[in-house]
Length: 562
Ligand SMILES: Cc1ncc(C[n+]2csc(CCOP(=O)(O)OP(=O)(O)O)c2C)c(N)n1
Ligand SMILES: [Mg+2]
Image 1 (cartoon, rainbow, N blue to C red):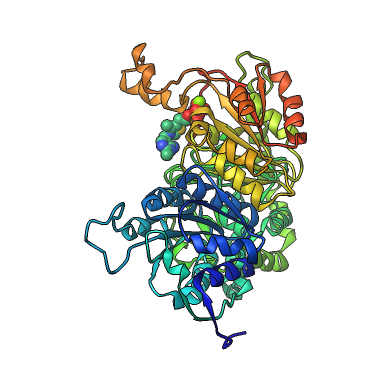
Image 2 (cartoon, rainbow, N blue to C red):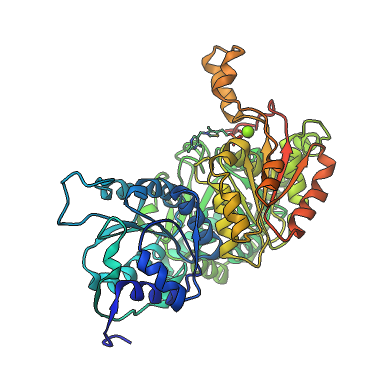
């Protein structure tokens, strides 16, 4: 209740507020807010995870946030601040609510060549929605509230708070404060802004009038929790649905109207359907380069409508015939309520056409999806994951080939499964998967990463074992970063020299053995037929598990069609 100040330390105030916002884990590298950590132990049940690098702390907080919808908290001392900032970039690109706290500068000693100190603030600017300093302990309550408010509202995203002192020692000072929290901002979305009904009806009319429409569902659908409304509208009007990578879990891949992920890391069928559409309806999508294959899918000029919570996203890349500013769940619900189901009849041929395109995709890739080849084909791994990932799993996927293989070849089969993907950073998935498991401990977490991606933060196996974070990590181990192969082929004029492989290959390592040495379950899979049993064993193990799958270094993921 506001107006009930009492004398307390910044540390007590912070601990009480984080507990009040429902924070269950914080991810950090010491030493920052030391007093807060000490106080947390006696006043809260918050788990304080001491990890092996600031970047992985940020990725864990990001995975936690994307899995739970609650802001993820990560912390670093002043010398680790830019490592932490580097880790916020993926959260920024993916619109994930992460709150980063770092130590900062003392006004008394600024500009005097203080050990380890630079001005960190400018580096946080491009990767945050709000980037602020706290110099006076009395500002803890309002600034922490503002951090949660900014991270969760509108299009969500990261926030940075820098605390006075290289370790944020301002937290040990006292002031008259009240650790008031606003629970509304403890998760996404705090508001569901209602759209203007006239704009809803105008967009619905354009959609219903179209003969060959397609919906492109983006990350905004998952942020809004609007999957059910999206699928209901698509069914009512008989409209095929493509998704961005970030929106892949908006509709199960097994749904008859699902055509796959569109854009660059995509499935051919999705791009082909969009190429033949007479109207594209973007929902919760920024229409960015990855989703549209750099504005070739659909071509600029294709008739489009768009729904977004952020008015500035509307019409950014495609001139619009209609647009709606509002929460995706509310907007799609209103469209559904006003939908003329009779209009669906005229799209029967179109739906048939899109289903034929999807069948052609399966026919083209069936032999790879079912391949028994040794070394194992990544397509087969994706297919096995489609079949065997549990119905309530969170699937976490790295970028590069991992993003391409899984974006294009893997299918979710239940609306209760989630899909979280790196927004571009190699190495994000393993720590993000651990964070996701912390954010949703009751759900199975299955992470898919390449070996180059896994190397980045391999030390976090130790964190997973120490904290009993029982996520399953599947490593597509081909002994190199083979997504880079094509580009090097090109610059070598078509064929690389033998020596060129030093640019993108590594030594062959058995990650299962490393995992076992570190106390995790390690399973090495060399035959595709052994994968389902390995996955089942890993999911049932009462410890973190690494499945090292020996795959073909010459397997290249299909590139986007236009
Ligand atoms: C931080 C970062 N640095 C570099 C890259 C460029 N990159 C994309 S994929 C890749 C190699 C991926 O190798 P691996 O994880 O083993 O997957 P593979 O392609 O072998 O399946 C690299 C270096 C990136 N995406 N992110
Ligand atoms: Mg690799």
